[in-house]
Figure 1 (spheres, helix red, strand yellow):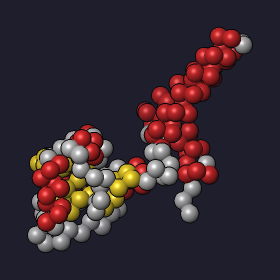
Figure 2 (cartoon, one colour):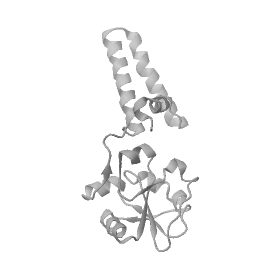
Figure 3 (cartoon, rainbow, N blue to C red):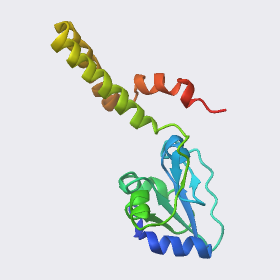
Length: 174
C-alpha cells in the first residue's frame, strides 16, 4: 500500500470514542510530550521500523503528525508496519485543533527541538549581523557559520546544534 486513506478530525474523534480506531502519533517524543491527542500512542517516525505495533482485532490504525505532511510522505512505510487497515488524519494535529477538538498539553515540557534550533540559530545569525554592523565586520562570520551549519544539517540529517541543545538541563528527562 503506497497511500493511506484520509480521515477527517470529527470522524476520528467519533471513532476514538467508540473504540474503533487506534491512534498513532508519529511526531518525535519531544513534540508528543508538549502536546498530543488524548489516547494517542507515540511511535516516532525515526523509530517506526523498530516499533512493535500491535492493533487489536476490529480496530483500525490511524496515523498522524502535526500537519499531515510527514504522514503523507511516509504512507508506504507506515502502512507496512500494520497488519490490517490503516488511515491518516487529514491535516494532522493542526486540523484536529482547528476543529475545536481537545488536546492534552504540557506547557512545562521543553519546546520541540526543531523550534529550539530555529530560535537559537536565528538569535546567533541576528547577533552576528548586529556585531558586524555596529562593532566589527568579523561579526558577519558568525552569521555565515550558522548558515553553513544549517545547510550541512539539512543535507546530512545531523545537526550539531540540536545535539548541544539536547544536552541542556531543560531538555533532560528525569
